[in-house]
Length: 115
Length: 115
Image 1 (cartoon, rainbow over the protein chains, first blue to last red):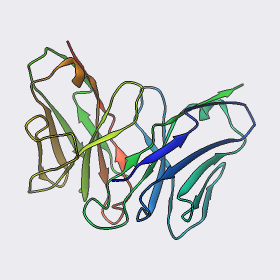
Image 2: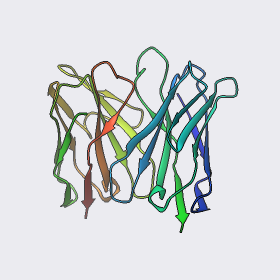
Image 3: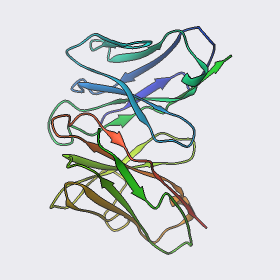
């Protein structure tokens, strides 16, 4: 089955700096890669996603890049703010066949933005 | 976007008992899933709740321990049976809207403590 590795496990940045979180996946058939933000005591929230036919996607201060050849994808947050502090999870979904919509999650990155 | 609710939001149970968690959506959805999130950990898929048929369980999860029902396109239940302290966790349902089967949106979760 799919295996998703996520790094780093913790990340501290100064407010205004950029943060980058990286994930690798094992199943070359995976074609959907979402990112979730989970604040303490809250549900995971989908913040951005990318599909295998796209190399990069941006939404204001958040961007995701995908390298299918190397089987890795990254989340980039620019101009970080204290409210960006949370745990971020990457995930991957199989491309086809049984279970094609099931998500396999990385272990998460705890981002702390220091004012 | 769909509004997802879960009941109960939290519960404290005695070992050996069972608890049924409900997930209700305010609109019809294609896919419904159940996840477990142990304290400080990532999300692990328990099963896909299939409307009108038996759920599809992931490796390590069995129907006798986690029976699931999905009687229609807006409702599902997860039962945690014969509980032990190791079952203490947050249980989350997620749903995929029609036409967006890859995207998953999470309910608020049920925090379960087993004594």
